[in-house]
Length: 295
Image (cartoon, rainbow, N blue to C red; front, top):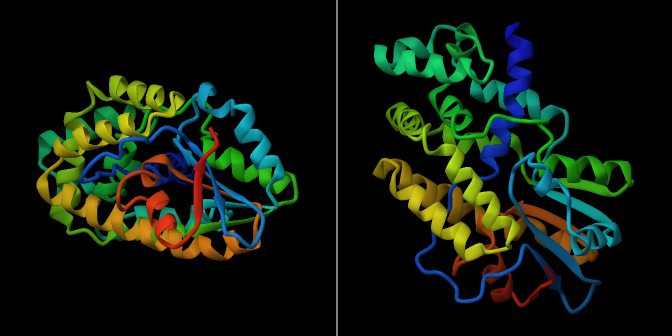
């Protein structure tokens, strides 16, 4: 497989995981049941926020009727990240090491052998992997092996385009990748080693995450995420909490305001961004929006 073709296959998986990075909350809200929430401004018509799970599992892609109906009523669709064609180019640039660097030279021999083995099982030859940054390999190894590659956020985006809805994103791919790309190299390598250590238990963990989402149990998703975060190196856990959850929640609430003001907006973000005292739902309530569970 050529390097460009393999990179084209790789970027949706990495993007999907960037959209679903682990979250952590200081305490669990007593009522966190629901993946679809209605947001009322008091002026425009209602809008909806869907907490997604970034998976191509058929059970996830088969949207329940309340979600389909809200999506059909919406005039616009906003994803967590803009999924336009330029996103692939931007992400590939972020994922790739400078020309004079190789991943094999950044890792000890045993870690490099393990990386080659697990990435080969996903269809990525060593020469391609050798050009990737440690964080992009770490995230790829934290994803299930794709079936169709059509994860939920992309399906919604394409359906919105086909329906003629206005589409957009709360963040750019460059912004999202930048949260990890800017990490010190030692932290990235620690992420990679942690991902390797989790390979045996990954299928069970992913199955439990999907099950919690299908049950609309945000508390269970939080607990699974917190448990997983505790297994990360402390430096990585701190980055995830501050950069990838709290800072991004506030930014996304700020950027969704214009769509909410228009009314009948359908906004899809990773479900772990919704709950908690600093989650999107609570941040919206503090700003005076009415927020109620629909499904």
